[in-house]
Length: 34
Image (cartoon, rainbow, N blue to C red; front, side, top):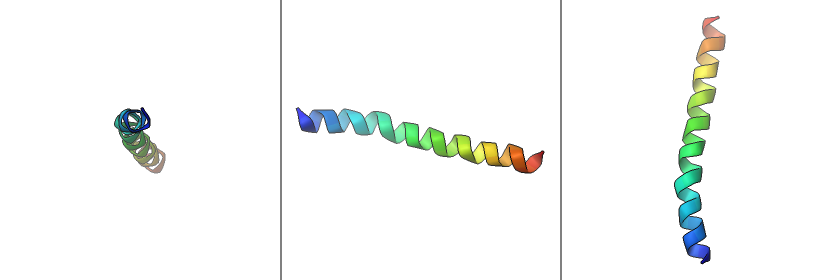
């Protein structure tokens, strides 16, 4: 049960972290551009 939970957690959390990093990166670009 715990291993299953961790596996599905990783599948959802890793993309979320990547999206947050990309969002922060683009926000920095827009702030720097403006």
